[in-house]
Image (tube, rainbow, N blue to C red; front, top):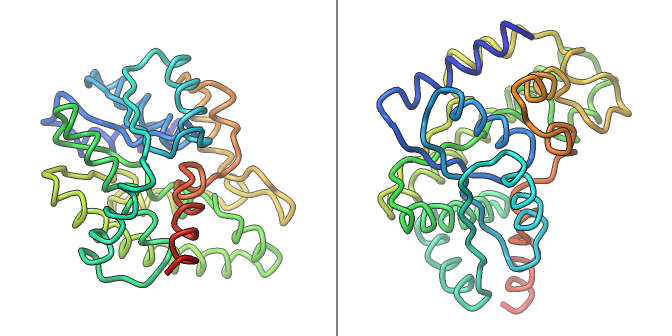
Length: 251
């Protein structure tokens, strides 16, 4: 756990060494809360940035966790009419038919809008944790096929994530925002792959996963409700998926 803790610090520090003030894309979950704590411990001025439809899970949960962590927190509640307009813009910008990618990119378009409104130039995101620490439910489903299959799934998941990241950066750059992803640096990826699988996932019925990462989060002061929270993807926690599907049904 000590080695992982240092690797996490190094990954974040190398990304923001020249940046005194950063935004963190924040849902209140373990990954974004851990990232926020790392930035804070590195003596950066941190602003937590959360987007979502009114009443969505992420709006409510992030507000609670930001208060417990004592960090500056900014919210943007999405308007449905505006969402329809911005969605068309994002579709044209990334020219992608993958629903999950489109939903993530519209989320980061709003994250970038909120960052810009708060005079932030750099936003950090915790992408990579679910891929590298078996956070997705699909890791559970292949567990009984053995470690080699888990590692193959990890490689496929990373390829998909890097494609998504390029699309996110394209959308954010339109608003002058640089998105940094410290947990997808080649150095951190190589380190994370050396961590034994049984420290990430315990079996096919493991509904929590990412165990060693959660231990580090707790040690760094992430609230327990966040550190032990089960996975809820950004597009679901923000209710973006719900309203995206509503638009698709109308079309």
